[in-house]
Image 1 (tube, rainbow, N blue to C red):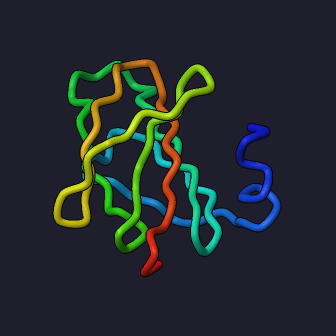
Image 2: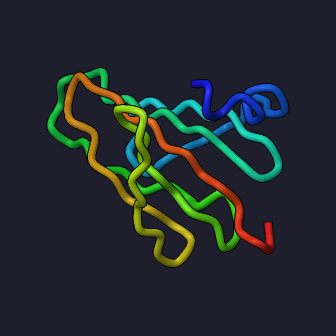
Length: 98
């Protein structure tokens, strides 16, 4: 998590909820950045969720293998799939208006 040292120093836990109550959501955020972990620990089939974009004009990136991949945000929301028994980590960064 070395690439997010400033966020981890300046941020704090934050409530985060998505549309799928079967998933677990954990958020750590500052005023301009956030890390969100979404886990699908139950092995049920429904693994799709939609989350609000925390920052206006911001971006969302999935973090995996030390790399970030952009996730599309539409109308202030973004949707993802998490396979049963797995989790995904996302980095959010505020835009110029955040």
